[in-house]
Amino acid sequence: MHFDTIAAISTPMGEGAIAIVRLSGDEAVQIADRIFRSPSGKRLNEEQSHTIHYGHLIDPSTEETVEEVMVSLMKAPKTFTREDVVEVNCHGGIVAVTRVLQLVLKQGARLAEPGEFTKRAFLNGRIDLSQAEAVMDLIRAKTDRAMNVALNQMEGKLSRLIGGLRQALIETLAQVEVNIDYPEYDDVEEMTIPLMIEKSMWVRNEIDKLLKTSSQGKILREGLSTVIIGRPNVGKSSLLNSIIQENKAIVTDIAGTTRDIIEEYVNVRGVPLRLVDTAGIRETEDIVERIGVEKSRKVLKEADLILLVLNSSEELSIEDERLFEVVSGMDTIFVINKTDLPQKIDMQKVMEHAGTGKVVTTSLVKDEGVDELEEAIAGLFFEGNLESGDFTYVSNARHIALLHNARATIEDALAAAEAGVPVDMIQIDVTRTWEILGEIIGDTVQDGLLNELFSQFCLGK
Ligand code: GDP
Ligand code: ZN
Image 1 (cartoon, rainbow, N blue to C red):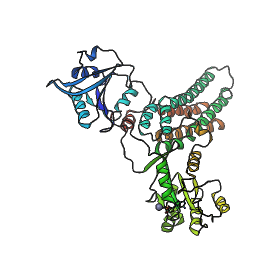
Image 2 (cartoon, protein in one colour):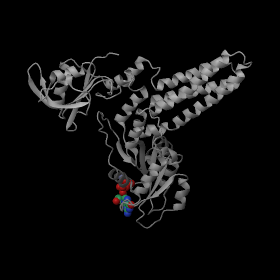
Image 3 (cartoon, rainbow, N blue to C red):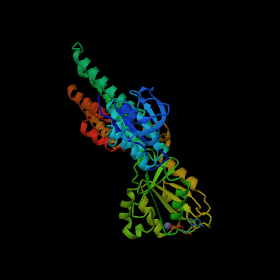
Image 4 (cartoon, rainbow, N blue to C red):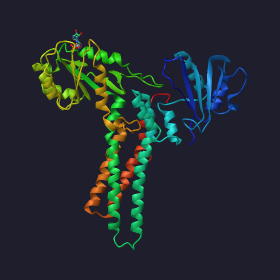
């Protein structure tokens, strides 16, 4: 395939001491060569691939020096885009990096669209679609754990899993053809149907496993939306503050990140908490008073996690009872605060209300119990095997939708097989499942979808 040469600033604007202008395409090296001057007079187009060169950029029309730079030279095909790639490392200021970009554009490069580098990597066969999407997730990843999920996906774990499912389906279809083609078998259906049922069940179960990880994946990407509720003065603000203080706010300035953060993110043991403004306030004290139990339930339902704070130095009040009612059935951690004061709370009653929910005791003035609370949060999220590092999380909304489709279709195949429908009818559903799974890795996607997908990327990626 042949594409023109594109360029963009691939580091965040105005942040950091170094900025990179990246070029990709057939002309990348020539364009850089025309504007690059090395002290020793060497020419970039005569240099080896994967080398770095110190020098200055000059504007050929004026012979004026524009910038002091380091230029990385990476020739096709061992590059991210599989095209010739040149990266110009220059000073990080907006003025300097914009001048460098303008210079390469003047020499014939075209300004890249958002995601165009990644799109080329895909179009040139370097990565498949789920890997391309992983690049996007990586840019947006909120914690190390989320980053690992994206990295796993980028390395192709999801692709391999999906590939395995498709392989099984194709083999089944092939076997069916063989059975049909050999008339000496007196009963094709008898040979074929059990095989189709067996394979379809396997595929369905594997899809179920993948789907089970999807909510975790989404949360890792977007943050566990968390609301702190409790009566006035029980210690909600204190709790909020100690969570924020103990856990550095999440670093999101990975190269190329565009920020549009409204909520506050903190990283609690690898779980990104998004302390949300569900009811208009992050900590919610009089929500029940204001809008009643039923409405509060609706509002709080949007939350993934509720931290209900109680004051252990007071007896449980009517308000507390109503809060128990409001949170019943939701993922709640009960925080019994002020344990440094004489205890008046009826713990037995608390336990009864909490049911299977976690109960943690804290003294926020003494900074006690916050570790246990964090453990409880992480435990709630990474129950059992989900913690395992090489788990493939499906977190992408498009993948989840396609997996649901594939599941429904293979379910159709199963139902048909069990109902004794003719084999060729079942084949249609199996084939369709194979196609839908293919869309996850970009085997059967349309151009329009591609453009849509890649346009979501940040500029310079
Ligand atoms: P909110 O109204 O629920 O947000 O409660 P605050 O966090 O503002 O705390 C109310 C008061 O209780 C403040 O004076 C806090 O210093 C105090 N407080 C918070 N946690 C504790 C605790 O664990 N022990 C004691 N003795 N006081 C606490
Ligand atoms: Zn408060």
